[in-house]
Length: 58
Figure 1 (cartoon, rainbow, N blue to C red):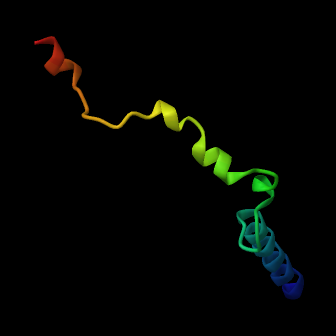
Figure 2 (figure 1 turned 45 degrees about the horizontal axis):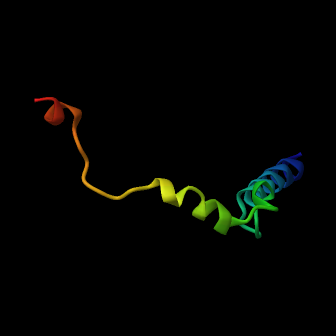
């Protein structure tokens, strides 16, 4: 009974590690192109000074 319990724990840890991507690309990320996701909507970001609404109204 103890051996079965230890095998279940080891199997659970292995499935968790596989799902988190410790053995390569995780299943949830397969087929995605990370460069496209990083470059999306870069034109919408405008660096500049932060303006407070309270300072503009006075």
